[in-house]
Image (cartoon, rainbow, N blue to C red):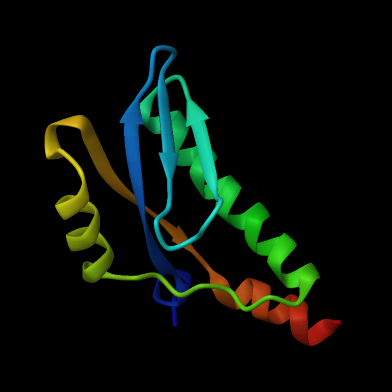
Length: 103
């Protein structure tokens, strides 16, 4: 099995700011990132999710699963489609599960 098959796809909502872009993941409360370009904010969001998951593991909290198409539909009902971009990041949650089993 290749690495891509173990990846989970998390939706990222990106908005324009005065200084660049901000992003959050509706499936992960409290997780956000910023960047000067769309590419940078997506990269920073991936890093933020992984860092957030590391903290959740340390706290003994379960990792949230990606919401899939329901997340996309919910976000688009709540926002003006012209005011935001949607992207996704791939996260290997099994990496975090391995960390828990080694504890």
